[in-house]
Length: 405
Image (cartoon, rainbow, N blue to C red; front, side, top):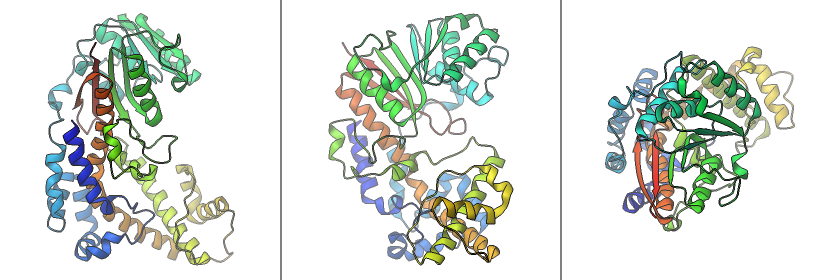
């Protein structure tokens, strides 16, 4: 595993100039000057050609290799971690709608497929960050074992208990949901889970990092983790867990750069994606206006905005955005011009992201292998594999760790 991490570390470090600059903030990255033909080829893509490449990452790799031969190494860096995803998609452990009322179909399938990958399940289980207990209920049915779900939000715990009562699955009585901030749990204390097996599906950032660190200290018998949102951490820069990864040249990686690893959305409805794109066009249009007025080309971030703002139009959005920067806009603004500027910049961002996204999965694998190496250093036997197809969830890397006594 260390040699795999080293190869990724070397490749990502050598070609960092292509993926570290965030196109949304950086209209003219340095690589565009060093590789003008590549930049012109990307920006010259028609809307149709862009859409076709955006749907097919492998085709994008093949297209880009002519200008950046280093991408030919990408496939070999990623190979070796995929399972037979077509077989796992039909897992026998997917609950029926009657057994799992009010459980979204995609979540039902994800939970069932994961339960199938974790077989045999022969010990009591703790579901880390359980939400309404969807995974906990699936694991109870798949194992017949007691399952305890830990969730910090009491409203989700209450709702989950209602769903347990409404379920027609005979094993639901084995599920217990508890209100618990998992970040407050410490190994080798009376509050640490007493179940041998910890499971976490899509626990984000510090939630899964805390699990790994504390579970290793507790010498947890078995850890099954599907991590997500690696950038959601209190640390402003990447902090390796393993001793052997601290030599990395990427030690200064920022949260914004780490976020690249999860910038793949295949599960959101088309309408939601369209709304997000429109908001991004407006953000870029406003930013072009702000920079023109202030004579300042430094990007200024905005807080998260709701799609409800789309109801009020582009001018109202810009006035809101200006207020977030403690400023105001002139009474007379050529709104169509700045909206068109936003559309132009958005098209540029999309095309630059085609190249940047080639480094998305390698970066995620590099981050996850740090966790694997940390667990190996702590005395665990560890495997890493995908548990489902990308179309079901792009966050599909499963770490399985068993403590070696």
